[in-house]
Image (cartoon, rainbow, N blue to C red; front, top):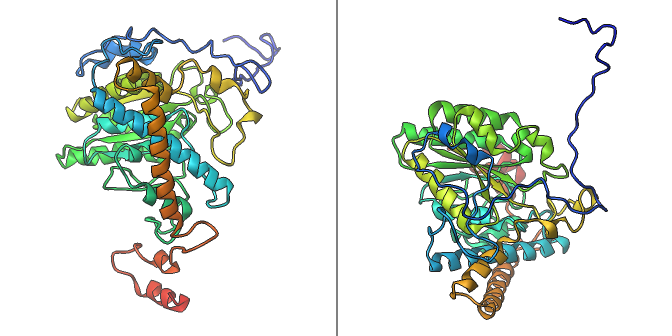
Length: 415
């Protein structure tokens, strides 16, 4: 071994990844290699992971620049299903806009929107079956919207009012619904990725037919729980789909910090011997097709699949965030994969089953529905006005049978 004590090789240096551009600069997505729509092959569901390694480095796309559905991943949905999907995405976007305003008005303390990412969760939900369980992050409310979860209940939870289904025990937007396959959101990032694998393993142990879906953002893949989940999923071939939503930014840190030198987030799955695919997260048709492929693989006892959704967080990380401090203001306009709502809208117009007039009408109808739900939710109270969950609720649901010391404390509290 050479002796470097004399400084023969020079001093060591540390590499810190930097985004291509900072505020004030011109947006640059030249590093995003986008294949032509329809050009990425569709392997059989039972394909050997070794034979499809290339899919971890490409992007599966269905909608081309003219709004046409092309290639082997097209044709999974009927026109009626696509219209329904468009309305779901429009509803989520309208819901977001109203709740964002409500937060600015002081009606809730906090909100996180999905602007630009609506296709990911809305399309994935439609590929699942009743009883399947999602372990989501805070940006998958589309899983609920697309499953017809009542918006009034979502809003009551956001407002933490007397009708809050979680009785004030959660932060706003951290929903929970067993009936709709939506496991309670955890504010601790990445913890539920491995829980999704455990739930899937339990389903297999019970010889059930239900599969799980884990969700994580690109930044949270730097957490150790992400890697632990991949170890267990690959070892036991758990019936789980491991979703990575790569929206280019964590809170104020660009994706390169968590990705490191792997090239893509999907490529992480290759080291564990799992099939790994990347999909255009702003293409509703592509998301559904890939989700259906991965879900079928899990349900057929073929093991887990890692799916990376390449998308872009067009809005702020949350109502506590100012993205102009760390990225160009026009960056979202330059995102090369476009807007998921507009892309599906243009596809349906091209097929002759939608029109600008119908779209305008649908926007008005959806806005009216959301405002009606908002008025009902606000009638039960908001953050600083109206009814609140009872203090009695903090004693309920902790134990199957309330122990004497808690009963005494409740009595002392007068609730």
